[in-house]
Length: 138
Image (cartoon, rainbow, N blue to C red; front, side, top):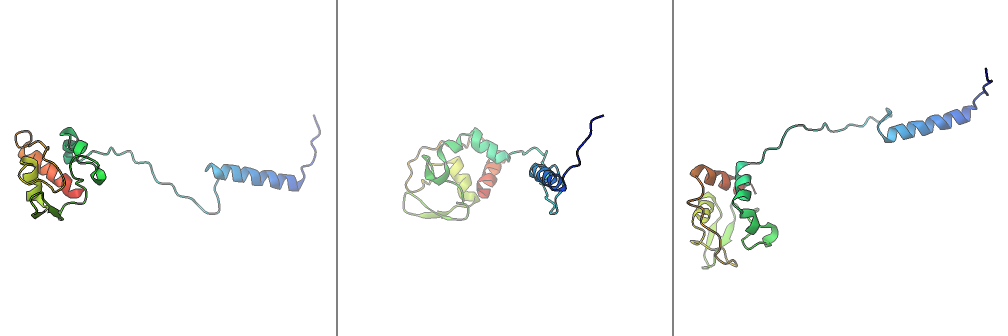
């Protein structure tokens, strides 16, 4: 049987410290200050029906963030005054959004050309409500 040398206490302390640091860095050892991790959610995120319609109907192609599309940015518009091409203003409320979706050429937003298709014959009343609720939340 081989003879083992007696381990130096300094070396043992150094090895112990290194192992503690290495294991602590990867979460394998407990430390004086407990860490918490957020549980991983297994819930599936289901998009709002209005968000799906916004994409399906192609609205996102023109109504882009920061006005980079051919239509106005719709985020943060609900409840705000909107200047129209004829110089008048309207409040962006549910009635305005409904009218703009059903007959977009009736009131053109200042600085934009008419070009949005009318969706009156393409969506149901329930879909129109879903789309308006989605736009309100933006």
